[in-house]
Structures are given as structure tokens and as C-alpha cells.
Amino acid sequence: MTALKTLMGRELGRAAHLVLDCLLPPRCPSCGMLVHGPQRLCPDCFGSLTFIADPACLRCGLPFETNGEAGRLRLCATCLAHPPSFARARAALTYDEPARRLLLPFKHADRTELAGLLAMLMHRAGAPLLAEADLLVPVPLHRHRLVQRRYNQAALLAGRLANLAARPWAADALRRCRATQPLGELSAAERRRAVAGAFTVSPSSLARLRGRRILLIDDVLTSGATASACAEALAAAGVARVDVLVVARVPDPRRRQGRISSEALVHSEDADDFTSV
Ligand SMILES: [Zn+2]
Ligand SMILES: [Zn+2]
Image (cartoon, rainbow, N blue to C red; front, side, top):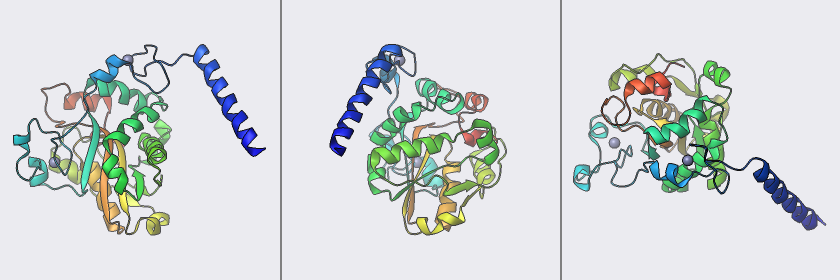
């Protein structure tokens, strides 16, 4: 009887999808063109994304132009000079204009349904990190920002990824305990100082975190200062290691040439590293 009910439920679900597809045919979330199924990009938009592949910095995931540029240690200059507090960071995409067309509506225009598509991109790029993770933890928003936006985009991604990778996640393990000043015009060192100590572990999560391998989830990695500050709070709570997985990363947010400038980031509030909370 239960099996019959399950089967009927599935058939009804399929029928409902067919009706919905006729009434509201799925469209590319980036350009609006009709596509074959929900949570799919059209071929042009998919082809315009810049997927990050090797060679990349072993630590922060910064893509290198060539194998030669990677050097013997395969670490970027920034990681050699100022090693981040996390073990590894990986991103699915370079944060360029096509990536912005997906991430800005997701973060600022209530397009929360994009979490499914973005999490699928992260799932592919972060497979090795996900395989080793005991717990997924989203970068938190300050409560004022959360009230303003009504959702934490990093938590939406973490929830979807947890489902895809069959890993547990803890929505409230980290808290942003103090608002930080706008970071856009600050140097890398100043940004690190600005977010240092801005995060804390919620007391109710301490037992769940101790000794575990944490995968920190966010939408965009800019300077890495926010991720490092989160990693420091988690390390103080006794976690075994912290890796970071994001949808997109800005190779050098202060570089004005190229497809995106720091000015554009500040203006559009793309990254919390660059905005007040
Ligand atoms: Zn499209
Ligand atoms: Zn690096």
C-alpha cells in the first residue's frame, strides 16, 4: 500500500511538473531564453562562464596562467607572503561579468531559486573538498544585514550542497558578532585587520565542531579576509581543519584592468568583504 502511494505520488509530481512546464516553461536564469529544464543555463550562457581549472594555487585556488607560473610549491605570491588561516579554498568560476549575471540576482534580488544551479557548479568544483568534509558551515551575515536581505545566500548554498553531497551542515554554527566597516578601499592588510575577530562560534555548536573537518561555504571569495576570519574563529573552537568552497572568486579585486574592477564590486555590493554589514 505504501509503495502504491509512493508511486502515485511520483506520478502526480511528474504530472504537476508537466503542467507547470506548459504554463511556465523553464528559462535560462541568466538571459531568459527558453531551455529544456529547470535550473539549466542556455548553451550560450553556460559557454560564457569561466570555469576555474588547474593549474591553480594549492592553497587559495587562484588560477595560474601557465604551469610555469605556478612554481615548484604551486602557491601564489599572496599565500607565500600571508598564508591564509584556511587550508584550501576552491571556486567553481572566475568572478567576471557572466558570473555576476547569476550571482547578483541571487544575492540581491530574491532569486533564491538560483541556489540549486549554483550549488551544482560548486559540487563539481569542490568534489575533493566535499569528500573530506565532516560538516558544511555557511559564512554568516550580521543580523542587521540578514533582516535587510531576509536570507543568507551562503546558507542557501550550504543547504543545497549538503543535499547534493550527502553531508551534514550547520546553519548557525558561526555568527558575525560585529559589523565591519566598508572594505573596498582598504589594502589587503587593512582588510584582514577590519574583519579580524568579527566572527564567533555559537556556544551551542561547540561540541558539534570540535575535531571536525569543516567546509566553509560562501558565494564569492574576494581578498579571502572574511574566510580567514571565519577559519580563525573555527580553529579557536577546536576544529581539525577548515577548507573553503565558493561559487566564484575574484583573482585580484584591486586590479582595475580586466573584466571587473574593485570599483564595480564596491558599487554593486557583490562581496561582503567590500561592504559594511
Ligand atoms: Zn542564457
Ligand atoms: Zn594562493
